[in-house]
Length: 303
Length: 303
Image (cartoon, rainbow over all chains, first blue to last red; front, side, top):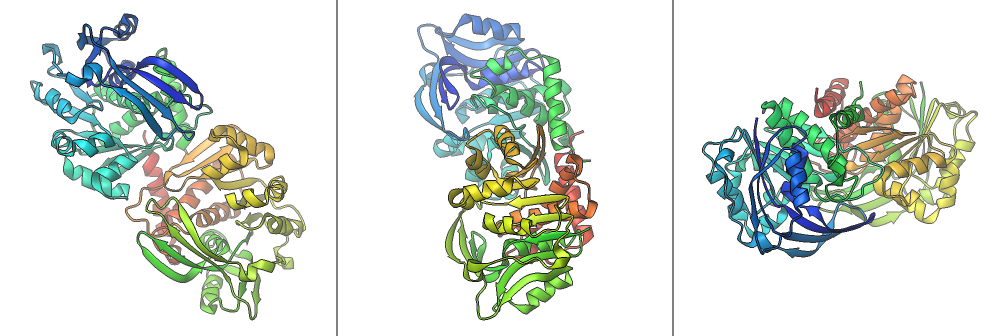
């Protein structure tokens, strides 16, 4: 079982109704790989940082079974930086600052040991880079999952559509599904997205849960109502890590098992939002994860 | 088994992205009673109309087992009228016109046969009128359910809080729960609402489903993803009708059975939004309702 994850490893400044966190560890690939590490080892990451990125965080990721062979460290350069402020409802946010730094000229290079993964998780990045990674593989993985965002639909739609043709599962939020297809009904949006390539679609709805579509079949995993949401940053990536980690562990890519992957992704995301940065998912145990999955089962059980 | 339902019987002008409907049948009590009639008979309604309200609609309601003894018909007066336009997302709407007409001086009068219901459904109305109905009962029903809206929180909060002390189940939407309690977390809002009186809280989230809270226990019924939503008007009332109809039929007011009530309410609401006015719930069969409930079970089943 092997999982390759591509995406950013970065610093974030975050402001939420619960408080502020400055220059904390962030980045899609950080959340994805840490979350997936609870299900599968190694998680082989493809990313780039500057020499300002703390070595103890990298050592921590390695201790969790994250393989850093595909992580480029650019001497004399700075890591990607994002600053954002969440609105009171925690469902929307403003970007206050984006400093591409090492990401400006990022060219992913896959080590030889990365070229035959069972599952490939293409985290939110420039679609051309996502395609570049696909092109470097020796053979097509059993499952390719891609996360993206409205920003790429605005400025790189053709590139995005080209890579969508080559993947199995797309994860986006409900507004992005509507933007990508021009259809308000998520049922119709799912049909349109299937026609673009992905045979599975996960629609992430934050506090309202997640929907899984597969050619007319649908599964709804609600989100666990939480007493305190401290920081939503990385929740979608943490979901993706749990989702792909579960699938890489079980190697069963059926609709039935993908439902369980959605539940495990949702469980991991529910830990993520309970603290700033990666703090909510740094020290989990199998017992804690199992108990959270049980809470999801109880939440929807009605007979 | 008996159910008394209080609320408006009215005309609506409705504009949605799917089209327009003019002077169609509406009103909370219309939707509640028609929806409940699929579970329990009679449904005894307390409401008021003018002599402009079509007699064939009243005859249809009677044919469904709705008892009109508590419906006042004011000769020479006009029925309550509401006009609204839904936004593209169908989750929000603008009120274009409200003509109180007969509702301006509505004084509910409960016939003797109405004074000992098992279940009382107080549809969205002036809180003082809801209290007036409670005061006319011979004894407290086994279950009192109340629906309200942000409008009454704005202009009659003290009256609303007084009636909340006397009920068992409150049904409101997520923003209203936050407004009523000043708490963003729905878990904390539920605790605050329990302290106001209701031991059960149903939070209606439209396309995102419904949450049932009961002193630390929580149940999440997702909404069925529908290909076409034509008209959301009356969905919450139709939910309330299915919810209270199920409870009046089964007379089991446990948390476990209330989950089933939420599912049946959600199933009825999913029919409601598929057509304008009451058209989506006029001609249902037990088989259609059972099949919809099965669809809800499949939607969330994951092992």
